[in-house]
Image 1 (cartoon, rainbow, N blue to C red):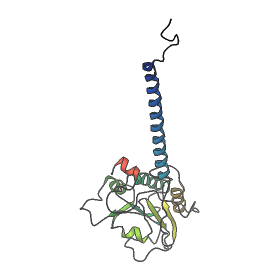
Image 2 (image 1 turned 90 degrees about the vertical axis):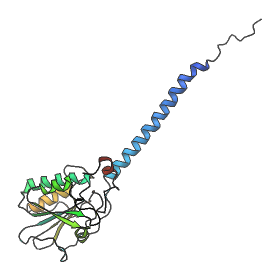
Image 3 (image 1 turned 180 degrees about the vertical axis):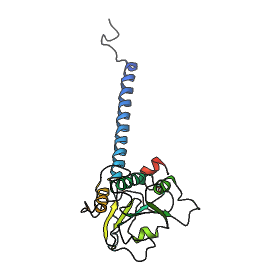
Image 4 (image 1 turned 90 degrees about the horizontal axis):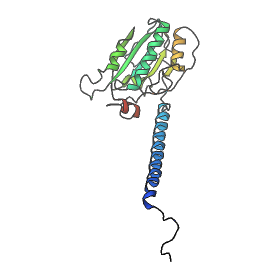
Length: 226
C-alpha cells in the first residue's frame, strides 16, 4: 500500500526564481514606461511656447534703446542665466554671418534685476553675446525694455525698419534650446538681405524673464545655469 501519491509534488523552491523573474520584468516595464512618459513630457515642453504679448507696431517712444535711422534695428532680449538661450545666440551668429554684421544695428538687452547682487547678470551667456561681431550688449533693468517690446521670454527678438515699423517679432529657434533651420532666423536674414519675410511672428521658447534663476524650465534645471 502506497502512502504517498505517485504524482510529482510541486517544488515551491523551484517556483521562486520564476516568480522573481516575472516581478523583475514587471518592475522594468513600469520603469521604462515612466522614463518614456518623462521624456515625452520633456519633449512636449521643449516644443511648447507660451503666448507672448504683441510687440508694438511702431518703435516705442519711451524706450531708451536707439533706433538706427539708416538700417534695420534688431533687438534680442536675453535672460543671462537661461542655458536654452545659448542656441539663440548660435542662430543669431549664423544670421550675421549670412548677411554681414553691418546689415543691422544689433542690440542684446540682458535682463538685470535690481533686487539681485551686483554682477548677477555677468554670466558666460552674456559674455558670449558681447563677443558676437557688431553686437552691442546693454543692461535691461528689471526687464523694463522687454515689457515695452512685448518680450516675455529669453531669446525673443524684434526687428524694426529704419522708419520704425515692426518687421518681425519672435524667437530664433525651432524649439527650446534647439539649433538648426527655423522660420524666425530665416525671416531676420531675409529682411536684412532685402527679401520678403518668411514669417512676421514666430514662437519664443526661452525661459520667462523673471527675477532669480530660470527655475521654471525643466531643461535649465537639468543643465544648470551658465
